[in-house]
Image (cartoon, rainbow, N blue to C red):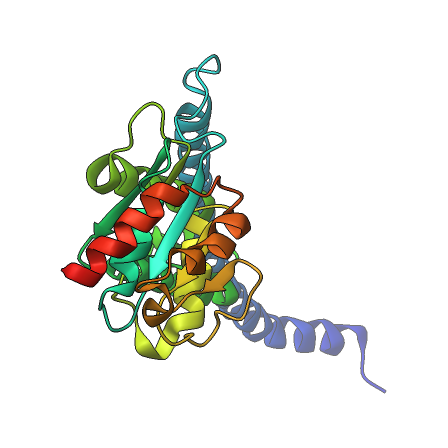
Length: 262
């Protein structure tokens, strides 16, 4: 049987080794905790930066939306008409000229396809925003795409409408129906492009003077062929009824007659 002295000696003999092991284990754990602390600090910093970015964006949107509550948007109550044609021809020109004979209607001609470029900008921004939001609840500042996750879709559509209206369409103060002729759109993304136009111009009506593009089978689209209009002003009457505009019969006859002699 071991004596008390031998037991104490045995304990003292093994104690330094146990302490060393525990010290090593403690040091390792401290290093791990410090690493975790650094990661948490980085995450907190990114979260604070993202939060500040969100707050700044909300303030900016508030300033844009409510900078002068007493002033109504210049396009409040305005209607939009877009004459679409894939082949140009006389159809869109006849429709444009006939509509412009109605007081308060202002249909511009072709604008050269800038809405196609704006459509691409809007679509690509939404794609990258969706991709980042699927991957991260908050995109850290270290991400190469940081910032695009805050793309404001509704504001973007409104600002695109304002840009096109102020720079290209320039309506008079008495204009209640505004539009233009569109002959350029992405052949492979017609449905998406039309949806984009509906977002930019709320309640827009589309007049199709050539073949009906994909995605245009909607109540807001109306077919009228150029060959049907030429020489027959009555072919326009149903179009004006669909638009709820008074049919300018003498003016429409003049437009059609001129088209025959041009």
